[in-house]
Length: 245
Length: 201
Image (spheres, each protein chain N blue to C red):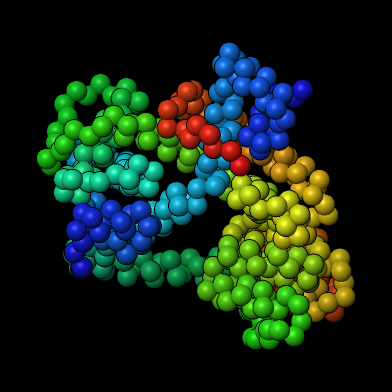
């Protein structure tokens, strides 16, 4: 029997009495197996331990916020130190402005392009509950979506996996969570369905995800296709292709 | 800023109350930072040690019903001190001088065990978060003992057998990624006494 499966069956309570007894006997004498069992149980603990994961996330946010406020404090302090610095900063702004003007006809970086063109789709204004199955769930999902709580929004969107609306907005949530492969999967479902209101938008987001994910060739191909179509995004796609090259 | 007693802070940490956690950070972090920097550490080290200490205190509060009978400040400092000593030891820091900036208490040895366990937890969590959304959900739901049929319905999967297969693949992928991580070998996995002896899904 595959040892890993044997161990997982034990953890999942899937062994019958005979196998359970021989498993316990074996694990007593087999150090490598005991270590593997230990590792797998610890991993289960971590996945299951919402409290630990939640606290870790809070502390991480605290760390980032404190770094940002410390760095902005440092910048302020440095800038305020002498009027020489202020004058130098002013001069720097003038020079940087000039350089920007000179360089503004050069291609954008992919990051700049994403910043310029990507905006998360607005949520649907109102979802009436009670009339169509799943609308209550969708309403909850949009509540989280509006608060930029994409993880919780996804919990609800994904429970309506067969609905195109939820698929489309799942795609946006995945982008926001930087899970690009999942976002691609969601938008491709919407595009392949080809009989809904989100096709053009999903296609456009696919191009942007390729950019975010540094898949430049795929992005160019996607935007070229959009540019020659009668999509709402055709003009923007033409622009973006010009900038990528 | 509202003040909190040691008991209120303990409850706040146990319940992951972000207001209390912000208070603790605002009030005590600078002392920890000063101590770490005085003893060969950087700002980043101070942030890490502080975070590790709060996680250790959380584990002890949540799993061992810890009651802090000194001031919270002294307890936090003592935990951070122990963790920083441990980190310096790992870095094989030759520097023997260790300058304390606050009073500290001798706390039980299990702090080190919890710290090591948390190091592993953080590695596992890091890799878990890198799994696809569906893999994360399937493992979470499975470990929350949600019936396979219900998992299939929630995730739009075709059958219970398929859920089980996906769960297996996701778990194996997670373990493979963890084992491939260079940090994995430096972690002490063997025979840890704090592992729940009978945690089973």
